[in-house]
Length: 121
Image (tube, rainbow, N blue to C red):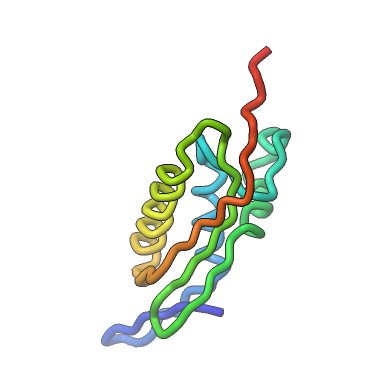
């Protein structure tokens, strides 16, 4: 699947893989959330591996020239889930619209679990 926009010179097509990559980069940088499939020891992995893993928690679809996104995350215990999810929705929407020029019609954040932050030794 891909999104597109046209101008007086032609059409620009943007693949869903590009959009997933942008979103995954946002997901792995979260302080109070992480991709749903990420394990606590993932912080020891390279950024590229973490991004590739996070992309599995993102689905992107297109209708006309609109983008629809669903992300699945875990939220850190003690964080306000509604605030975390709302900020993530705004971040995803802003990232996609700024980097691609496409209109984001909907961002759904599925909070599937809560995780405990490991204690410092």
